[in-house]
Amino acid sequence: MPIDFTPLDTASRLLIEAELKVATGGGGRFQPTGFPDLGPALFRGADGANWLLVESPQSMANRLERVCWVDGDGETDRVGTYNDACKGIPYVLATDTDNKPLTASTLEAHRLASPYIWDTQPFQDPEDASKQLTLPDYLKKLFSLADNRLVPWKKVAAGLIKVDPACLLHGVWFNEASFAGGKVRLTRCLSGYIEARDPSSANFGFQKRDGVSDRTDKEAGQSAAEGYGSVIGPKQHFTSAEVKAYFQIDLERLRSYGLPKEHVQALVAWAIYKIRRVLVASRDGVADLRTECKFEVKRRKKNPDDTNKNPEMEEALDCWAIDQETGERKPFKLPTIDSSLKTALGPLKVQSQPLSVRWIPNVEGKTELPEDVKDEVIKREGLQAKTKIDTQQPKKGKKAKNQENAKPKRFFIIMGEWSMADKQSLRVQNPDDPARSIVEKAIKDHETKWEAKAQSRKAEKADGDDGEVDNDDTEGGN
Image 1 (spheres, rainbow, N blue to C red):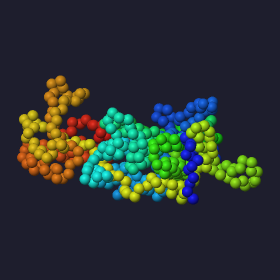
Image 2: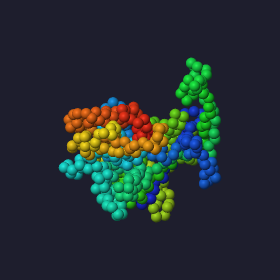
Image 3: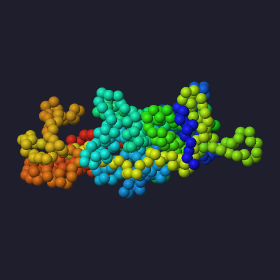
Image 4: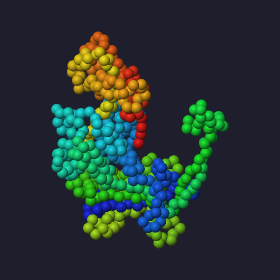
C-alpha cells in the first residue's frame, strides 16, 4: 500500500528523536566525536543541564549520504554506486585521465561544486549531441541563470532533480564568482546530530609497548614520532543515561522550490529512508560511529501502562509534524524501510546512466631556456593553446649569492593533458638542437608530474626542478 504523505502537506517541518543506547558493554561507555585543540564538545544547555555533542551535523550529513552507497570492487571501479533501493537516482560521476571512475558528487564534501566535478573537461550536451559544453555552462543553461539577475530558484531545483537530487536534501553552494556571482546556494533540508545529557567522564589510559627496544634514540631517528619505544597516555570516554539522535526535514523549503508534488514526496521519502538507514546500518550508521562508539535504538513499552511481565515493545522513536500555520506538534508515524518506502523513491529515478565528467590534473611540464635561445626557435604550430613561453622573476627567499642581481628566467611550458599524438607533433616540429633538447626535457618533466598527480602520488623531483614544492603537488586530505 502506498505511503500516505497527505498529513505532511501542511507541515513546515518533520522532527524525529530516537533514544539510543550503547550496543555493547554494561557500563554504557562511549567515545564522542573530538575536535582539534578542543577535544570533546561539552556545553551547558538552555535547560541548565550539561550536554555533550556525540556526533556533529557535518558528520551526520556524511553518514546520511554514505548509507545509501555501495563501494566499488577496488580494481576496475573504486567509486561504486547507489544501493539497490536508490539505484537510478541521478548523480555526477567523475572519471580520471584513463576514463576510470575517480569519484562521485555523492561522495564529495561540496557535491557538484567539488573541484573534481566542477573543474572538468567539456562533454557532450545531453540535450544537443552536436555541442560540447562544460559542467558550469550546462548548469547555467539548466538553471536559466543570467548575469545581474535574481536566481530563479524553481529552475535551479528542477535542474538539480535531473542532475543530482541529493543537493536539494543536503545543500550545495556554487561559490565561483563566474557562476552567477556565487549566489546559487541551497541550505540543507535534511540535518541531524547526536547529543548526550548530563555526561559523566570515564577516564583511563593506554600503553603501546615496543617488544624489540626498551628505549628510544632521537638522534638515530628512532623516537616515538617514528613509532619506536613504549608510549603511555590518557584516554577519555563518557557515559550518559540519555543519548538521543535528532533529525529534521524542512518540508516547507522543499515545497517552496515549486517542484511537482510527486518529486517533493519522493524527496521526503528519501530523507526518511536515509534516517532509517542511519539508525540501523552497521556501517556508517549509529552502530558504527567509531571503534569505541557503537549505538542502537532503545526499545520501550508500546503502552506505558502495560504491567505484563512481557509487555509489547517498540522502538524508542518519536516523530512530529509541525503545522506551518499554528506551530502545533502533531504525531506522525515514521514509515519503516519496506517495499512501500522504496517504491516512493521512484519519481527521482531515471533510466539513463549518471552524467559523467572527466577530471584532468592541472599539470605543467617546463624547462629553462638558455639566454641565447630565442622564443621563435621552438615551433609549436597547432599546440599554442597547450604551450607557452613564460618569463619568471626569481623567487624570494632563495638562498643564493647576489640574489638582488639575479636575472629573470625564461621557461618553455607545456600544460594540461598531452596525448602521444601531441607529443609526436611537437617532436616532429623540433627535430634539431637546441629546440629538440628543450622539448624533450619539458615532455619528461610533464610525464613525471602527470603520472604522480593522476595516480595521487607525490611527484619526485624532475630535471630542471628548482627544488621548491608547489602546494598543488603535496598530498593531503579532509
